Length: 220
Image (spheres, rainbow, N blue to C red):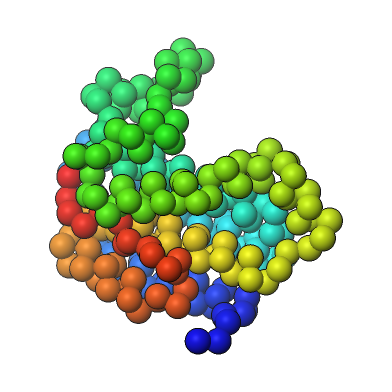
């Protein structure tokens, strides 16, 4: 198979996003409105926005910032899964409290990404947990450097970004977007949408990481 160009992956990324939204119910509604489901949906929509931002920034040549945003995208989909499957009622209360200084202070003890992933086994779909764990192990340390202006982004900015690297970043972004789409299907309670999202993994295999589980395969 010939190497995928940056132009090609950007085009396929746009097609994937359109396909994800076409697979979801229209109009979109939560199957079970509740503080837990509302919070999970909010985090998933953050991941949607961050995936869009990554692709837009990279398309405009702003590679450093686009790459950094994939860390935000990853943490948002982790938060969405954790809120739905693993957060306690007390943690849901803190996550959805009124935005005040006191509310923000109480929310400071909500778990960060490693603890969220550790809380998921036995509660969330195994493929989703595997995907999150694989992404974390392969990418999180490097992405941390991009968020904090570390050695890697400094050298990439000095020496330039290879097209191969940027294409790989977009594949990761697309994998997270597909997982987010699967999460949205779960929150909508649509088996039809879940199946359609899972089929996109095959249809868009050329634009995804080599192993990119579609994410949640069943409802909460």
